[in-house]
Image (tube, rainbow, N blue to C red; front, side, top):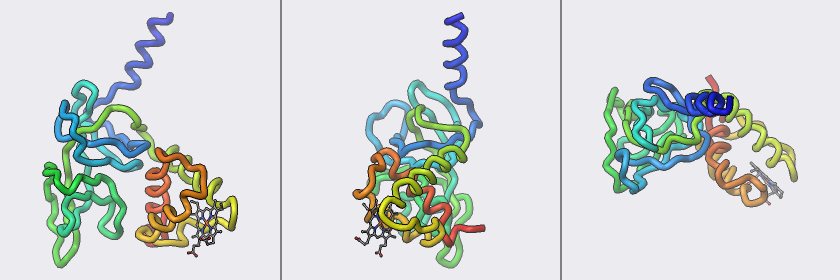
Length: 190
Ligand code: HEC
């Protein structure tokens, strides 16, 4: 009986090639399956595709946008500075340009890299709901809560961080809330 329960749990935590997952927190990014040198940070709520599981790591693919003047940051959109994956300035990541941006537009790119296996969920809605609640619970303590679309995606990070110290929001949730605010900002509405 006990044995059965354990195997079910293990099976449900395994990652499969082709799975689309979203990280709940910012996660370390590596260039391969074993190196301990962190070359970047994968931000929460961004979709990755699992390529292969290798030991404690997972090789993944992520699609996004690249501003040619800051090539080591992969953005969620070509309209605003919403980070999906930020590589260190000195890193030499394997970024492939899928569509070159014309006339100053950003490139459409994909990148392959490695991260740890934990802290992924297969649905984005529950983590966005949690972020929404963190925002509304904590940012309405002293004054009226601004609607999320009161600011643009580029305004949110500094606006939020300026007030962060006044709230009990945990460090590990900061990026989750920032991504939530940016992705629901006034200029991100469809
Ligand atoms: C402990 C009380 C407190 C909490 C909690 C709080 N604020 Fe504020 N907020 C203030 C006060 C007081 C001001 C007035 C300006 C100042 O003191 O900086 C303010 C001003 C603001 C402004 C206007 C800033 C400006 O420059 O006019 C925004 C936007 C804002 N808060 C957003 C937030 C957000 C987002 C959160 C949650 C992360 C938050 N606040 C949490 C007290 C708080």
